[in-house]
Length: 251
Image (cartoon, rainbow, N blue to C red; front, side, top):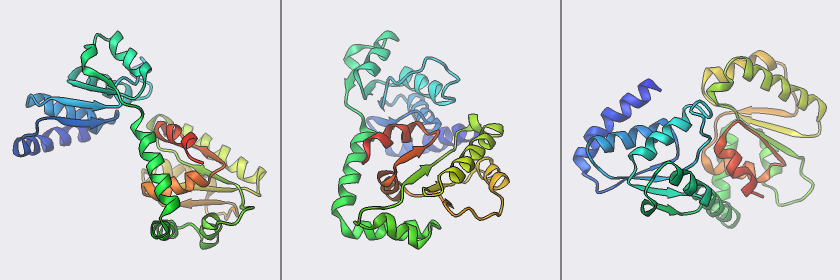
């Protein structure tokens, strides 16, 4: 995070000077968003924050996102809150009411647009099929979940990436997943693995080289094929806040 913050600050310094924008829009609560807002502040460029006002009021949970969004809120001139609750959070922090607009949840809006497009666009479905095969998902599984026919096997989609879970947390997660795969042999488990070694090492340690017939460890997916699988899933297991928002909106 030190490196990300430093690189965004110094990199955007030159971008902002050249582009000279009237407003900089930042989205969400990543370190990149916070650093982009701070870089704009240093050049006195107004910042508009999309997804403003999300709060847990615990700066270490989620970490570092909670502090990222609090810092961004202090910088922002325009606060685009997803819900009335987010608006209330900002008001309680003394944010000027006239700077707040409740916009709705842009993540869910984008999700609905993508799901509808996937359902209606045969060419896009073909592209998604290709991406799923390239990720390492077996052709038989891809064909099954892209078939319009009923009676497919149930699918559990898994992701994991949060730093708070590195170490023992991921070992526990992998042990739990292994138990589930053994107990529910009639269910397919698909796990697009994050590239971070702290995620992949526990997977290798727990599952080793042993073949487990109903779990598929694949390479990370782009947004569209991931949404497709999420839409096909019976259950999603994740430590991602974003996916916790999106998963109930599919189906």
